[in-house]
Length: 214
Image 1 (cartoon, helix red, strand yellow):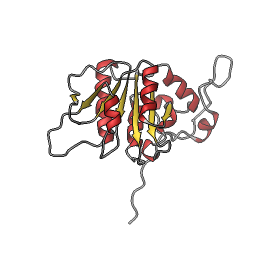
Image 2 (cartoon, rainbow, N blue to C red; image 1 turned 90 degrees about the vertical axis):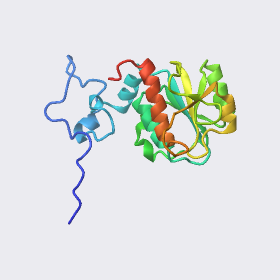
Image 3 (cartoon, one colour; image 1 turned 120 degrees about the horizontal axis):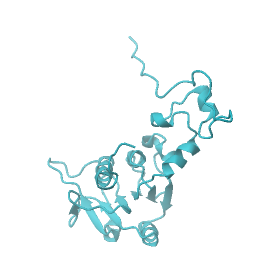
Image 4 (cartoon, helix red, strand yellow; image 1 turned 180 degrees about the horizontal axis):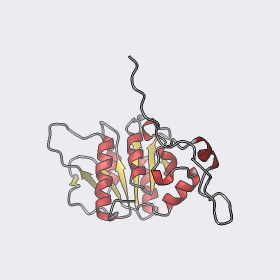
């Protein structure tokens, strides 16, 4: 017996006459190819049939003030999950520290809608943050870390995450203004890096994004 097929994502070709402006032209934000073939991308319904460039331009008008930085010394597969969450919370940008290449599969193409920066090492990220007037806040449960709960995360900042397993490097911890720890109640030593990123971004949003409805 064959497995039931999953329903298709997105929408098919546009049904009926195409939208037009008052002058009879196709609105600039719509993509003729998507209107013709359908839009199966991982995007909100409001962006269906929009061109990639139009989606990015619209997101740029309301980017949030936090950046997300991730150490990448061993091709951590969790980076894709972190990037996907950064897209969901409309981060200002993502920063890859260490190896330029990372496993993009988990991002499910959401990285295309973010601005990506690369820094060869921690010092490079810290210099960039200092030049742009952004405090760097680590996310890890290391000795001396500050509980995330109750911490007033600044609107404009860099949230710096380490790799799954080892966490933030010693150099990264040393360079952070503060390192934030997520309180845990079970037996595990740490939560998954992707989960930690989601928690700290949601914490930022509760402080600064107001109503989370886009």
